[in-house]
Length: 163
Length: 385
Image 1 (cartoon, rainbow over the protein chains, first blue to last red):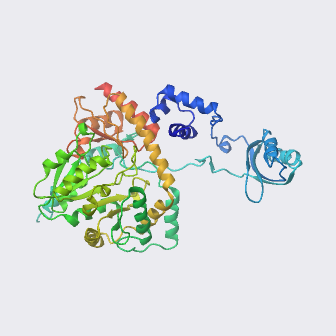
Image 2 (image 1 turned 60 degrees about the vertical axis):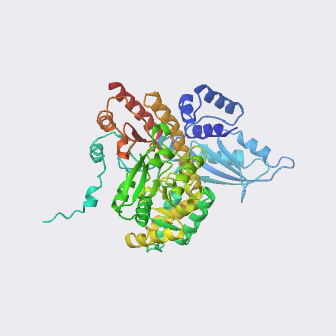
Image 3 (image 1 turned 180 degrees about the vertical axis):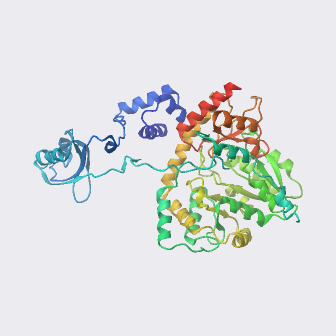
């Protein structure tokens, strides 16, 4: 991993649809070199997936997202890992993190509607061994996702010429 | 009625591209590479701190020199980033942009008849500011063959017994040229041998893409005869805030301060509060903007060369300065027709003085998408010639 690799990662994180040629021109690499580096980063598991930031509210699919805070009794020898991995396997869990503070695991869970989310929490998460407590927060509106604003911003007017 | 216009004011040229400006304003779908300012918004933490200060009633004059807290962080910043040593209390003045800093620096040193050497191509204000102060601007051409750096031999040739100062600007607007320490040492020898003063406008210092910026004030024994000008506009996307600064040894600084207090009193307080926040917490924002300029530069300059406009790689600032020699047009004709026929605004190089003719200043402070589209349009224009 060198400075060029980090540069490629930053570019791809912002826009993963750029071609190897376009990326190469920005980073002074040939398209072949660019591709080889990207393949290596994929093979090493640094690049996990290419995805899209979508404003689902605008797309109007009616899905409900929620943040679920979970308190857990850690396991001897394994700590939080086994239970976190177990929770991760659920399709409904989009993001899972171990946190400092008043609770342990934070889950981002999506479902078709509120009932589906609440059923998932009460039937699958809450009864799981070692889970002491859950708190479910429904997301009302997203304003920013992964560094991207989800609201329209006015274009700033600039003069056509300045020195 | 008498003619009230001062001869001196009359003598300075008005901007060479007024007609382009008016034309561009009437046109739709223009991609402007004519803009000498960042396309980013000011980082929000800077805006927020300024807004908050207004809410708290911080709306008064500041000390003439500027807010003490700002001068203090600036003094450490200059030391840490450029190894420049300026005392926060006696050697720094916060000004209304580098424009004002330039004006008071020149007025502080120029007497009628003094010659001030001005490297060209250069920013359009240097020579007129010298004229307005009663001095005589003398262009020193930086050529493409020298990668638009200042050549010591050319400099030496222009020195007369009336020469008082040398005005430089690296990284350079419009060429993007940068001077290494070695380049500056050669210039320093001449400046010191001829007992000249150096005014260095380093407003693009943060926008240096290869290695780090060398401040002229740190080279050889130049410090004691150097006025350093810099500001927040370019690095922090703060052009409209009008905050710059002048740094100089105490005696020079005092004279400049005298002029500043009569003509400006102080830089706007909201701008100074924003600038303070910029130094304290916008380092990451700045770095990510600089990084984006670097990527754009690489793709845009490669693109210009690909479509047949020979362009040296600019090591700093955010301008590409392609040559359009051999197209059969003058740079002004080229820029005018490119605007009318393909709706791409660029600035003809001759606007920037000696050495600028047959070049175009293209600012890559626009999105990559627009740069790609501009390249396509310029290519179409070239093939129509």
